[in-house]
Image 1 (cartoon, rainbow, N blue to C red):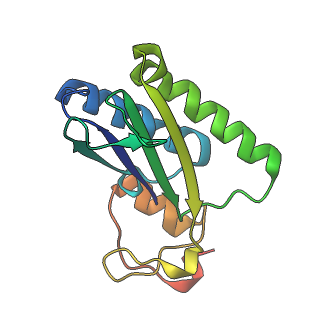
Image 2 (cartoon, rainbow, N blue to C red; image 1 turned 60 degrees about the horizontal axis):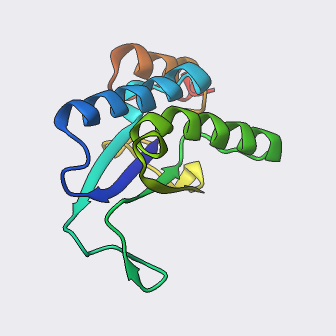
Length: 147
């Protein structure tokens, strides 16, 4: 699961912007690492004017994105750089292209510290995970299908 939390000034993103951004983020994970769509969660946390401060000064043009990766890990520095570049590129129309200052960071949680509806997620790219992707929902599986 990638869990995205987008901290942004109130009113910066319309409902249509949020829909478009979440579609872009979701498709990124589906296309690049074959995640089931329901693994991708995006939450928008809007803050009122003068509630975000950077360097001791109030900022009302700042977006902070915090992403928690669990379903996949990036052990290779080259893959990390590629991922960050791709995410920054896809996020730019919603941030820097609009004149918003932006920070993004990713944390990675070990996959064994994760459950979906009480079920241990199947191994990446296993038949069970492919079924979850087709169904767009978790379901019990046999260990033999888990990879």
